[in-house]
Length: 422
Image 1: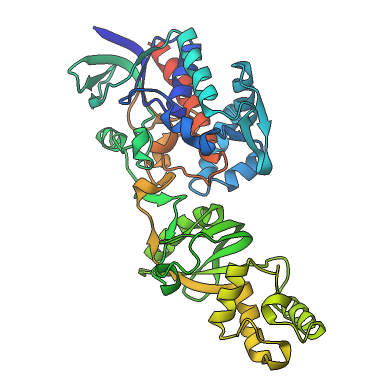
Image 2: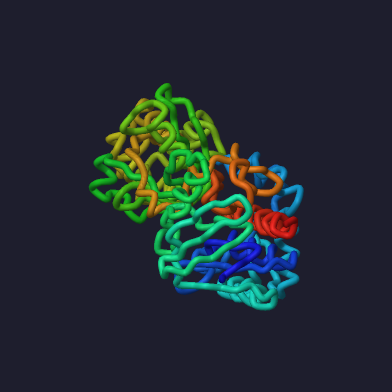
């Protein structure tokens, strides 16, 4: 009979870390994954370079995990981002710090991180079964039965569910774990896409007027129905054939979803401040001064370099200003409206791409039903959760992987301790 101390289901970052942590505690561990290889999501993370964690202070990291980040304070006291860095360096993976605290392997290859984790599993003699979808989990008092699609039955004292959410489904995250969590009595909070491109039906988007145009270091805001910002992110963005994408947009996307739901609306207004370093009046005075000094020059030539040319021409046209007009023939009123659009170009967005197209799943197993220092279920003995199946979600930049590795570590350690207590 197949008997184990700990069975980890899911071979993503949290599952790999959980299996290693349980193995280090001397438990007999089995890692099951339905795919043909481990670490598929890890291998494509960070653009294939694998942003393994972030070196910002814990408080800052929590701020960058808007979905229940505060739940992780206890977990970070047990295993922190600095511990993640030490863990990888002990496996022979040297890391380097890049902008905003992001930590990458010196090799710039995600596969080297995956290989190091898989080699550590082998060293700890963790059994691995790939291409093995789980059909059912039957929870018992002293042990649990895991039924594989192949018909095999596996018995274990501790189960770690590390099967991810529903985003990036080609890596195996297809939401399998939610029904297994519900079977144990757990609540699944509403799932929604986060870190996902935003869609818009505005004519200038549908006509692809700005498609492919990138704006650097703009401040993108999601506005409430009264026109006040719900959230603002200052980063890069890009216009696409369906709407908006890029770092600022991905970070704002969950607020678009939440605002549409909260205000029962089919659209939300966003605002782009293309020049966040100065206020509207300062910008107006500067432009008026520049136009006066070059009064014989066409406005598009005077303002060259202020904004990307396509965006400049777009805003001039929107305000019915001929790009070739000189300052003598330009009304103050039109100039003020143009400056206002430079600072707050507002338009409607109508949703996001689907959950399957998102980088991260919002929602999941309610953290109210999880012990924060152990990642154990409050409802079922010998059941542990880690990674994206939990209702925890962060921005891109190493925050989700940090959450996955920290929760994976705690789940693996405590699953092993629980099984050893028998």
